[in-house]
Amino acid sequence: MQPYELSLTAASEAIRTRKLSPVELVDSVLDRLGTVEPQLEAYVTVTPEQARRAAREAERDLAAGRRRGPLQGIPMGLKDLIDVAGAATTASSRVRADHRADADSTVAARLTAAGAILIGKTHTHEFAYGLTTPQTHNAWDRDRVAGGSSGGSAVAVAAGTATFALGTDTGGSIRVPSALNGVVGLKPTYGLVPRHGVTSLSWSLDHVGPITRTVEDAALVLAALAAHDPRDPASLATSGDYRPGAGTDLTGLRVGVPRNYYFDHVDPEVEAAVRRAIDTLESLGARLVEVEIPMTRYIQATQWGLMVPEATAYHERTLRAVPELYQADVRILLEAGELMPAGDYVRAQRARTLMRQAWTRLLDDVDVIAAPTVPVTAVKAGQDTVTWSDGTVEGVSDAYVRLSAPANITGVPSLSIPVGDDTAGLPIGMQLLGRPLGEPVLLRMGHAYEQTRPARRLATV
Image 1 (cartoon, rainbow, N blue to C red):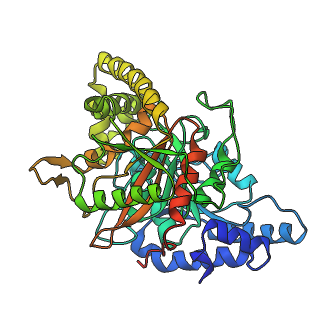
Image 2 (spheres, rainbow, N blue to C red):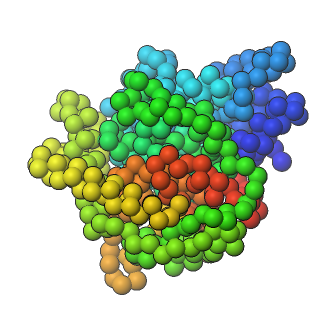
Image 3 (cartoon, rainbow, N blue to C red):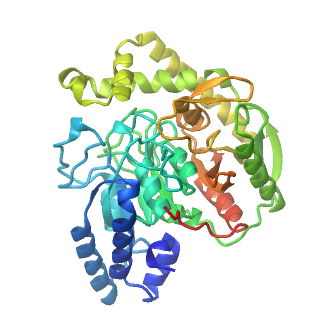
């Protein structure tokens, strides 16, 4: 096994025991990147000289006994919404082509302090306003979408050009590309990870979180990120050790299995894989409980009703000054936001309050809800719609956001894990949703499931 193939957890242990040096790991990842990046286009910018310099520094620190923790010497990718001092933050847009950050974002600063090494900035759907990341190719099939908006981060992790990465999630943008590329994606509780220095799409829906190869990897990254930051008004005053432990016994935990919404208009192969995974959770001791998802007819209207006007407000000046620099799909959405009545935004806010209350009651009865992350695997690049067996036609973006949006509206944590592949060899994801600040339970359950399956290989590209 080459160093670039190692999970974060395995690489960290190899570095700790001096079986692998940070220089060897970074060199391996950069060599891999040089081989596959022309086919995948996961990165906006790559910083090889800085990465190698940081690896040498990490090696010197370790030799001198200065160990910072499990992320020391680990190569990472950061979505190109996340500020790094002196580096470009383009949001994969011509609008930001000349923008350079004056200071680190909170998350970049915390990861650097923990010893992680930046490989480069990864592509996003322009300003995170989309679910496909059209610049980037799926790690398992170059003719298919990577998912979005954190498509570059998910592809980099799936292909071995970053050991872990950060994404952002406003309507599913960590979990969707994670599911489509066969990696782990965690959208934390709203406010758990600070967003200072991260370009916003929608203030009240934005989250920052890790994309990794294993659930334990995600726990290690989350531990480095989760702490209060007064510069983010939504930041929560909490932190913790999120490592899930080695056990697989889920006795006493209740898993909610939706009887509505989450299995409506879902590809049969996706449904079958997720239901098999749920059966595995039951075999590990969890108790399955049928649940009814509340207020389903309002979910997508509430998501778009919040996101569209907030995004337009953020872009108001540049949309009027340089509209021609936006990609057509993003510009249309931003212009639509200028036409949305204030009353619709207020009604979406009211609906969110009611939805949060309803989900609180729902999660009083179960510890976790298990459901598909997305209803269909990666579609062909350029495909605009999905046609279901009953003849219903759904836009690709609507299909991908449909099952992930509830966690953004309510702010509850959601963990996407790979649970198999369809007959075309494309990954299938299952998401586990829990109570606010319920990450330890999600990570414990996801890790227990993961232990029942062989380690997933990297994409062969």
